[in-house]
Every structure is written in C-alpha cells, then in structure tokens.
Length: 104
Length: 154
Image (cartoon, rainbow over all chains, first blue to last red):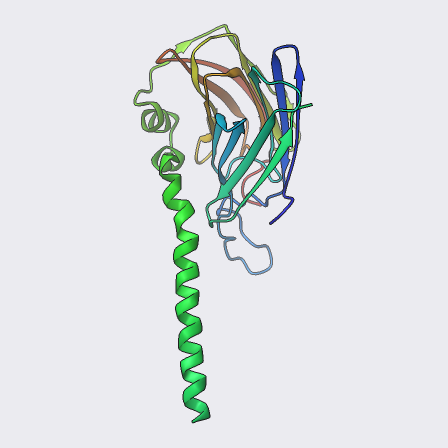
C-alpha cells in the first residue's frame, strides 16, 4: 500500500497549510454490487493522524461517508520550512500507510 | 511419509496465518479512540451525544461552512469548515439526512488552526452541520446542500 498518500505542506508566515490526497476505495458497506446484488463489504479509512515534528497536530476520525480517494486539508501554526510532517492512516481492515513530507 | 510431511507443512503455515491475522488485529486495538458508537448512530442527536456527551450546541456566527449550494454529485461534496475560535479541540462534519449522519470528526492539537477541509458523500439534500468544540463548549453552524444525484447506494 505504499505511496497511497500525496501530501503537500507549505508554510506562509506563521501558518502551515497541509493538503493531502489519499488513494482509498472508501466503501461504506451499504453499496451493492450491480452484477451480483451482494453488498460490497465496508472498507474505509477510520483514522488519519498528522504529526508535525513528532507532535500530533490533528487526528481525523472518519466514517464511510468520506468520499472515495479522500482529500484532506488543515492548518496549524508554528511550522517552519524544512520541518517534517508525518501523515498516516489506518482503515477498518487493518490496512495502513504513512508518508513524511517536508514543510515548504 | 510424504503425506505426513505435507500435513506438517500445512499445519505450520496455518499457524503463521493465524499469527498474521492476530497481527492485523492490533491496529484496531490502537484505534480505541475511534468513536465507534458515534459513527453507528442513526440520528444527529445520538451521534453528538456519543461523540461529545451532549447534543446541545449553541449556534455560532463564527463558524463558516464552505460547501456548494447545489451538489451535482452526492458522492463528492467538498466541505470546508473555518472558525476563528481559540482552544478548539474538535471539528465535526455531519450530514443531517445521511443514514449515518456523522461523516467525519477532526481532533485538533493545540497548534492546529480552526480550519478543516474534506469531501464527503451525501445521500440526499440536507443540512451539513459543523460542530466545533472549543473551550469545552459546543458550537454549531449549518448550511443546506441540495443533492441532485445521491452518493449512497447505487
């Protein structure tokens, strides 16, 4: 599951804006397969954790109601150019991935 | 003899599979913080009670929801929530008439600003409610989004 995250963090003044795109099917578990009529099992990201230089700045808790290939953006203060920003996610099936981006 | 070694081999590999299964379970244990009950609640009230311990929130003009007035595709509705409040601990995005209303909850650290943006699915036209927990109090704002094609089911 490597490279499922694309993230960009940019510092402007005191504010760092993080934008991330994650590749994930985000199945709610309610959708039906049109051919077989069976329900497609739920498969979605439950938690995304963002760490700035090792400190957690944001934890996103998601349900299946977040769109497929989720987009996420948030801001925090105190980030500088060259700081590390780690993003990691875990889904309901135990799948996970993480990436470390540099603040630009 | 060959059969016996084969059995032994398959037994050993199934034991490995069990171990892997147990290993896969551990991330879920770590996720104890994930508010399962709130994400299973079928009403806005229940979701908020499960998540924040209260369904009472004060309407606030300091919460801005940016979402389209009309969403052509309910599967992808961009929603941004912005607030100038301090001491924010949580921002939740709730789609009022979804089967499971609570779409996302963002737990913010002390350095995070009052801004989150994501894309959610909406089953039908309804209010998008943003709930902000700041300084231990709950504030909310809502905005109606008309959905022309639902994003759930299909």
